[in-house]
Amino acid sequence: MTQIIFGDRIAKNAKIGVGSVAALFDESGKRLFLTKRSDNGLWCLPGGGMEPGEELAETCVREVLEETGLHVKVKRLIGIYSSPNVIIWYDTGSGDKVQVVSAMFEVELVGGELTVSSETTEFGYFFQNEIEDLTLMENQRNRVADAFAKQEAAYIR
Image (cartoon, rainbow, N blue to C red; front, side, top):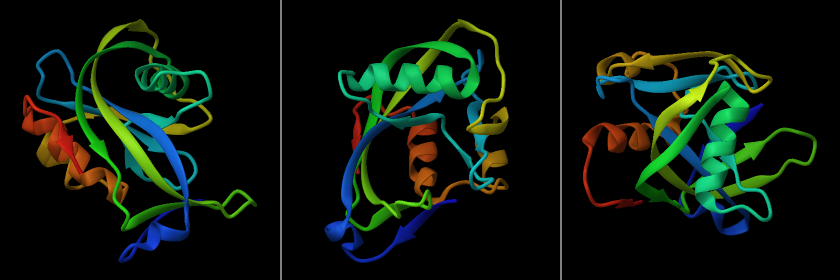
């Protein structure tokens, strides 16, 4: 099970992982798309880790496709996230603890067929106030708020 662990400079003994997440809004621009993870049952933005030979924006597009069946294209950078006070612990046998450096991109839908995957069990578009009632991965809360803020300049957090 994937867990988020918080602590003062807890990441000083962790590995570094690079990834990205996608902020996909519905046609009205008022509801944000989230997925429910199969490994821990928590809601989050679709996304994941970068693979060798990829650009960060390609990571975002690939991860959305793998997790949802949707084809998207990147519109803009919303923010970069790299807190040394947060690690992700992947309980996959290796016990890897990772400080994630992640970009969040606003994306737009260009096609595909929405479906769950081995990584997701549910999905949906949500108004900001509805997300407050979901069991959201804790490290995603500021990202969701940043996506809804629609700030022109990218956040650095």
